Amino acid sequence: MVFWRWALIGADVPAAAAVVAAVVLMRPVSGGWVWCLAALLGLPLAVRRCWPVPVLGIVLAAAGATLIVGVGTEVMVYAVAFALYPVALSSARAASWGLVGALAAVLGPGLLDALVAGLPVVPARDQVESFTTTPVTVAVYSTAVIAGSWALAWAVRTRRGHTAQLTELHTARAVAEERLRIARDVHDVVGHNLSLIAMKAAVAHHLDTDPQLALRVIEQVSRAALDDVRAVLGGLRDAAGPPDAPDLEQLVEETRAAGIAVTIDREDLSSAPSGLRMSAHRILQEALTNVRRHAGATHCRVTVTVASDTLDLTVLDDGVAPTTAGPAGYGLLGMRERVAMHSGSLSVGPEPGGGFAVRATLPFPT
Image (cartoon, rainbow, N blue to C red):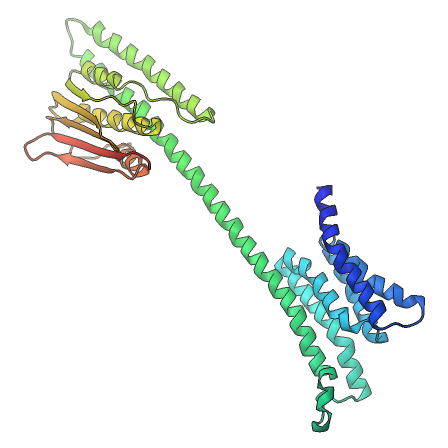
């Protein structure tokens, strides 16, 4: 912090020294008060970005004095504009008051002196050569310089405000996307396993021969659900990203344990990126969960193929899709978002010859 403050001061020292030198050299007048006036007008500019409002006040007072005594008026307007910039850059309210004060200090004494002395505001036709020294011309020129400094500060302040708003929007969007990712992961893990538990619990009520078998499956699935939840939470704490996707065979075995015959045709996924494999696992997990919800589904076929630049998934069952949507709302939405994340394609719906199919194509990142 201290280093940057000194760096800002060092950057403004040449301008401050130039103002002091201009006041002393352009209108040399005997007396130490000229040096004092030059110092009041120029030296505070070295710290204008550290204490902008006090510096502007000192420079405005010195500017009024230069107009009264007629020393340093040529460079006075530039000193005021230089001091006004950091004030106008700080806030809209400070910019407004700074502009009013700067114009009053620069224009007020000259116009008042012209009115009191009875000087012509606009030169006569035979005095065109003195046009550049009339009060109106000086006022217009001074106003243009000061307004230019104020306008530049306003433009920079506005741009910074827009940049800050964009940064805030991007941050809020990132937070929303992360929350949605967490919701998808929790739904995929918990919903998948709870579906198995609910099905086995319902079957256990109707088993007379071996209800303990269903209870053992419920216990195994419950433990697997806890492990999956721990993995999700571990992925949230791990800055390196989500954990690797479990083996797809595990999803198939869980579906078979629910009483549905599953045929799997899977190619080697080692050539696919890890993020693509994770998305494929979540899509298959949700698709197999939907298979167990379909009325009359007794068999499904899972096909996973890897081409040169795509990963293709197909889950086809012989059941009938439910006519009403489930309460969770994250299943199909989660699949679509995971596919869209990889700029892929997804088709979900009944087959013409009967059954229900989920097909997804995930292209490799380029």
